[in-house]
Structures are given as C-alpha cells and as structure tokens.
Image (cartoon, rainbow over all chains, first blue to last red; front, side):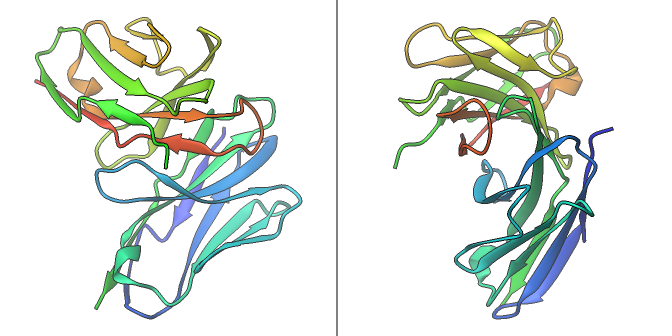
Length: 114
Length: 115
C-alpha cells in the first residue's frame, strides 16, 4: 500500500532554534518527493521537490534530504521564525501517474514560540 | 504572481443538496486537480483533468462527483447529493506539466459544511 508517514506529529521550538522533520514512505515505484508548508486554513505551498537522484535540496532556511534506498526524507529548518509556525507536509508521487496524483503525509504541526 | 483562485471560500449546505465548487486555475496551465482534506486528516487526491477529460481519479471520486471545464477559465467540482462525510476543505490545483517534477500550485480552498 502506498503510504507516507511523518514524525513527529507536532513540535514546539523557540524562535531562532533549528529543527528536523522526518518522512518515511512506501510509495512505489518512486517518482519524486515534495515538502509543502500549509498555514492553517490555507492551501499548501511548495518548499522543495526532489527526484531519485537528488540527495539534498535547499530553499532558503529549508533544507530537504532524500535517501531513496531507505525511503526516508527529512526537512531541516534553520534559525526558525515565528512565521514558520505551520503544518509541514511530505508528499510523494509514483512513476507513471499524473503529476497531481500525490500521496500526502499527515504533516508535522510546527509551533515556533518567541 | 499568478495564483489559483477558488470560490466560494465557505459553503454550508443541507444533506442531499447539490454543490458546485469553482476554481480558476493559472491561465497558461493545462492540468487541473481536486483534493479534499477532512478536518484533522491528510490531504487526499480526488481527480486529475486534462484536455477536457479525467486523466486519473482516486477511489474517493465516485459517481456522486463530477468535474467540468465549462469555459476557458473555470474548472468545477460538482457533488450531486451531498452527505455529512463530504464536509471537508476542497483544494483545487493546477500545473503547467502533466508528469514529473513540475510545480503544482494550490488554491486557498473551499470549506464545505454539510448539515
């Protein structure tokens, strides 16, 4: 079964601190993995997209890693800001499916405190 | 910056009523999608649409759902006879490519409440 699991479910950190979110997937055959940020009541916004051959991709303070052998990914956020408070969702797609046929994780709810 | 827009932002309806959710994708995009997110749960894929036909759909997208591109700009999701369990946030998305690693742009969502 094609699944995406994320941990932790929720996380509270102080402003300025770093954090790392985890994603494990069983989606197969793998095409690509995306990390999205979703503010409460809003649509998801793309942070990174990685294919099988990419190990690391950065977007500002966000750095995603991918280990396609172990089917694991992480999202590292450095120097957190209050505006980073949101749900971070790991999303995986299969080869042969349409681009939008995506498998979503439940997300990690990040709260950044001042 | 181009964006996907959705209307209404919130709709309340009685069980059994028909509902139409509207989306205006990014103007030069050709691939369109609907997703739903039940409160507290993960986002779920409903359907992909290209060239006036469904490309792919999930098991959730049963006969009570339909999609249409009635003109050159709108993309709609119709729920024929709503059920309580249809209460969710519905997201529309569009992309310029149909496969691979193209960027997917989501709208802000339409919250549907079925009473």
